[in-house]
Image (cartoon, rainbow, N blue to C red):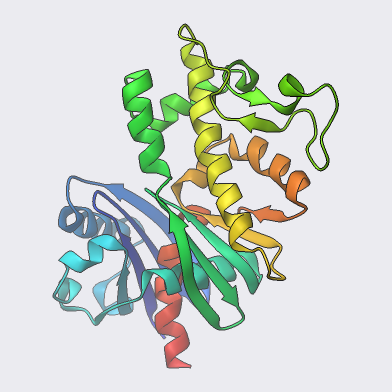
Length: 275
């Protein structure tokens, strides 16, 4: 059996992985100005750096919004497409080892996919994600470089911009400790520092995503959420999601290769169809 290549084609960023004998081979990410350039740049670089020949490839599987722009076989290889939400579920399930979960795909926006064994379905989402963070940072911090925003946030204090329960109550409220956010950015002043604005923006996006995921699981027996996508790379995830775990009595899991789960799932979609 040859290697199956999964490619998650974004508008400007493409993620590519190989699956060989059910092992993930050398995930890679390429950024370009358009999906066609991004796809072929990623594919060529991936083959070159991993010494893979075209004859070694069994199948190329495309997914992601940018895959709609690709309507012919990649380098004349057998090429197919996988539903993005199915790919999200398959990749998250494979990397986490869990099969009764909600997958929280944190991309430009955020999609929610429920997995119960082989039943994988899109259940909704919110229009808050990495695009929100980049756009608000562009307006408020004059940069859309998420790495720069994250670095600024490391030196910020969320309590300087957001209102906490302890700010409005002398005692903890039922189920709400004093350090829980009561209102994001409600405490912000006109002269707030760039560092405090940065941490406020990141917390706003991550807390909104976490709360939406928990609400999506109400009236179900799902208590585990697998986070995938680019925003999982933010170091602030290690602050926000453990706090939300305690608040809601749930688990948020960021698996290995979280950034590449959709590409992994695309390759797995083909593999599972062959068995």
